[in-house]
Amino acid sequence: MEPKEQNKAFKPKEKKYQKTKLFVLVALLCGLLAGYGYFIKIPVAGQALAQGDQRAAEQGITRAQAALASTLAEIRHPSSTVSVLENILPENTIQGSVSGEKKEDTSSAAEAVILAQQSVSDLTSQKSAPSEKTNTQKTQSADKTSSVSESDSGEVESKKNTSGGMLTIDFDDGWQTQYTKALPVLEDTGIPATFYIIAEPLQKGWSGYMTPKEVKNLSDSGYDIESHTVTHPHLTKISSDEVASELKNAKEYLENLTGEEISLLSYPYGEFNQSVIDTAKQAGYRGGRTTNGGENTPSTDPFRLRATSVEETTSLAQVKSWIDKANQNGGWLIVTFHHIGESGNEYNASPSFLRQVIEYAQSTNIKIVSEKDGMNELGL
Image (cartoon, rainbow, N blue to C red; front, side, top):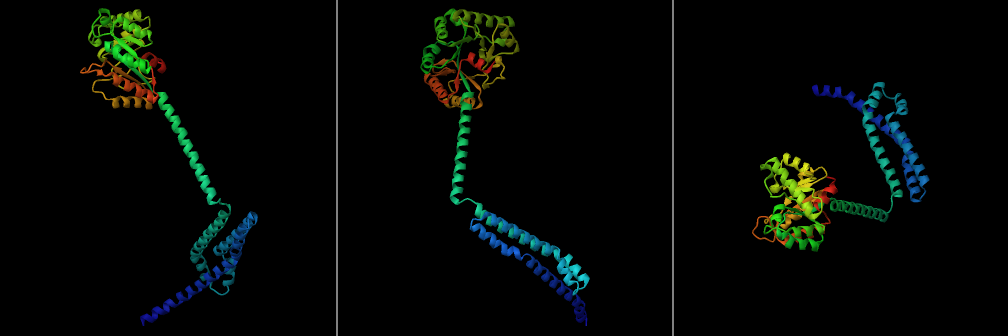
């Protein structure tokens, strides 16, 4: 008995479901009838495009879209269909069907809209899209333009790198070999250089150092002569009066010898402090060169100029890397040499090594300047 009772209970729902299906089918039929114009107008629009009549094609597409809108409106708001069915179905069945089933129908209609719009878009693009050959030419043209831009950008960047960096080759102490072995290289390569001279060896004629005549010849030849004190003392370990005497007397002696202004000081052993700097300023110096490695910039303290010393263990690759970095950064690199061609000395470099450094620097187009000119270039 229970199975029969269950069957009886389910029969009204089954009947109601059948009526709902009937409504949905009628609604869809009405919608298709309302959208009939869309499906017959799309081929018309396509034919117009094929014949090259752009205006007729656009009109056909517009009409088709309007018909499609009517189809969607009819499905979403089937007022005429409801009016017909009100006479054959109960009110609650109609309301339930419209509210309950409308979402699914609307979704299907929305999918139809998307597909139809894609069809219209495809037809239009087929007419307006350039040929494959034209597209290829445009792509090649764009690639060519991009390549030119990259080339121009690279050229500008290259110019910036090579014109921004500066290099100074300088020599400390005034050793004889700087005159006999370094000078010929400088003359052959035609670069400026700076020589920091200790005054006392010249005054007393010490062996192993340049003579006053040789220093004068360097100055007359256009090389920059600067001060390395009188006796090369540890400036931070002597009295302030002794510091003042060292700086003042060396400056005066070299100015009298060369007839040129001496404005730069190389701190012996690279040792200095604020008291030494203050004394140097009072003695009339414009700047002081340290042995602290690195590059100089417009913001560098002129009394703390950075310089990197070449030692016997320094490789050519190392110096090249210093030059490349200065060139890239637009900095001012000072490279300091001492003994030239004195094998076994800690601060020795061969004449061929010096030549290789200079020739490499020249190949990079870095600007090679004297120390005094480097100061002027940076406005120090």
